[in-house]
Amino acid sequence: MKHTKIPHILATLIFAGIIMFSLTPATVSACEIEVTVQEASDNSYTAGDTVILKVAVFLTHRNCPEGIDATQFTAQGMEVLGATQWTEVSHNRFERLVKVRITADEGDEAIFETQRTCSKEGGYDSLTLPVGTA
Image (cartoon, rainbow, N blue to C red; front, top):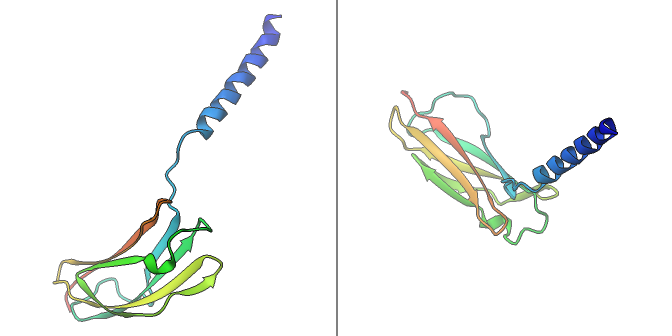
């Protein structure tokens, strides 16, 4: 009889472990954001260079209370010259091109941040471009 209790106890412990693991909160962004250089050709940029960035946002919660226009941009070491309208390229996936001019000094960095804030955790991404010599 001792040997028949061991599988039962083992099964109970495994089940309890699965339950405890599934109740552990996980941090998941409600929006997946990706910022990339549209035509990446340089590893380093200089002051005055014009760069086209592509911002892609995927709304993982299909009923997001914030519209796509609630997406905010912050630029350091670069000036935003203009941007296209948001385009829905597939269901809940939006893209926008942003034209920037590098203003950071040599040896510094130019940083472009994208953020969405909402009651469902929002999302964030940034792109850092190294600024070198001409």
